[in-house]
Length: 109
Image (cartoon, rainbow, N blue to C red; front, top):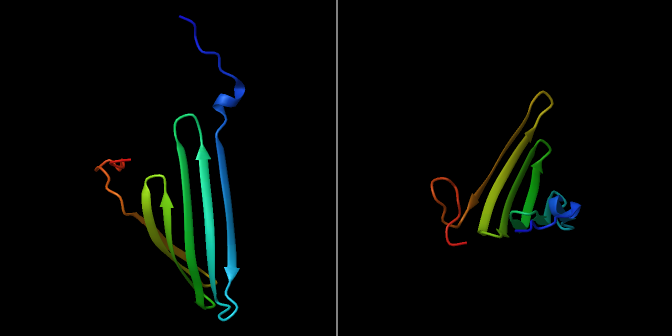
């Protein structure tokens, strides 16, 4: 049995990220953004597109909500950042809408 010959490009993992942000003209403390991600390797391919709305109502407080669609289904999240001189605090999370096993393996996809 002959082994399949591999070239050096079989082992290269490629990740592509592209994003854009637009500051709203009617309220300069708010912006909207769009982010696209694609990862290709020899095991699996992953693609995601995510949109976000961010606001900085106070100089030291930033808030953001986002929604996305990826290879496995829908996802959404939020983030909050508190930027004071002595301490910077960040809290963020994502949640997935699709069903997963207890080991966090997606079902039906």
